[in-house]
Length: 294
Image (cartoon, rainbow, N blue to C red):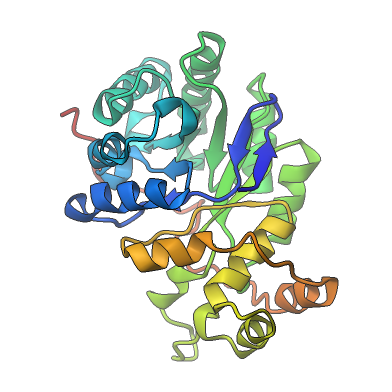
């Protein structure tokens, strides 16, 4: 396992299991399989509606809580100082834990950024009180990070953003690095590219990219494994999602080979600059959905 030391000294396993779009029925088994495989980092979110099942999987695994890095996110309907403190209570109750290793804001919500700032100040309070070990953000662009810095005290430990070979986000990553924030890749193997399609009507995705496949053939590894190794060697955290035990194990089998500088550069050159997920500046209706407390 590789670890990344965050800007407050906390050590975070660089590779984790993501559970975005994992159904409640599948999540507990996926988390249990991941922890039994060797994962020690689980990423979830209030908006995924599966925090309770993540907790069930953790307990079923038999792995001590102190060995597991648990990360979750506050949704925009929970933003505001008191509201975010309450969101922490809801998440920890569902997960069945007393503290969190990383708590982050899910979106910048720039159309109501004063409320976003209040939410972040609540994270700062939770950190000061020892209820979370580290705090951060998700989907924040350099502009959002600059606005956050003007109204907060603590630099985010992590910024979780869409990042894969077809959307490398070099400017965003550079902004993170400049302020001491770790970039964490969601959709690290390009899964988000499977859904919207490309403007030219094609269905290409990194899992079938011939450049990545060629690199994988040199190491006896799959496209997914090559991409995860690319993230790790470039200093990022990655949280691939799967509910299949075989794929979960495959995604963890990335610590026994190393990409060459030429191979890393070849993957870097695949960047198309095309976002697959939602634009962080897109306005979301206030009542888009709310997080149930039970």
